[in-house]
Length: 355
Image (cartoon, rainbow, N blue to C red):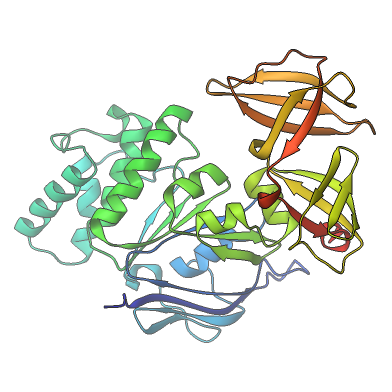
């Protein structure tokens, strides 16, 4: 049985009065029951504005938003946030400091007119779900940042909303806590089956948590797809650069061969009618082999724990980067021949990259 459509966003535009360019520009997508969508992009790309429209804090300039088959926002109507069947988790936790954990979670339930027994049971259920059982009587200042964010998630989950919106919920946390919570948040959301939208500027976070990713730039979704599709087959140079942190090397086509200053490779599927472009090669797809006759030189090496990251100087004075396993251990100054996994390389036309 197919999952039902929970959220439908149709041709959504948000134009602020003091800006010429729309903050959100003709965005459309739909989510089914249990989907986790990541909105990924740099600051100012429109992802938070899009989330605020879905939450009910901003009204669309054009377009509609449907939740559970009902229109909750359009140019002529705006259902208030508290009347939408949504939960919200903010970057700064937004817990009430004067209320203990149980009362923080109960806040949304009181508005829904649950009985006292139902509220008590639900508080126990969500605290167990987020791994904080037994901490009902503590106050926010007595918890770590990671625990406070789990309380915020529990509060959003308690009323059993149709949709949960998370606005960069991990960005205020230490790296180790963030990495641990990535797994926990995905596990918790999947356990509840609630549809979610997760806003972040961290590509690793989006890849780890989400079922689908929408990469945003200048108010538009440049590409919407699975994490695997976004990473392995980026639709534009922007997506490739932002998500994969790949190298881009000027290249010219000669038949099926693409010639660059570091070598030439056959890429039969790459823009057969385009005379020149930029060859995208991910850092992990470059293999290094010492070669005294080579023109590429290792200018720096960084130890990253499970791998090395090499900075390579090309004949033109440019830089490219390669990531290798610890088995490849070459000193700075070594001349190296480069091999690439050509099946994973892509060429982007020059006009596309300039755009």
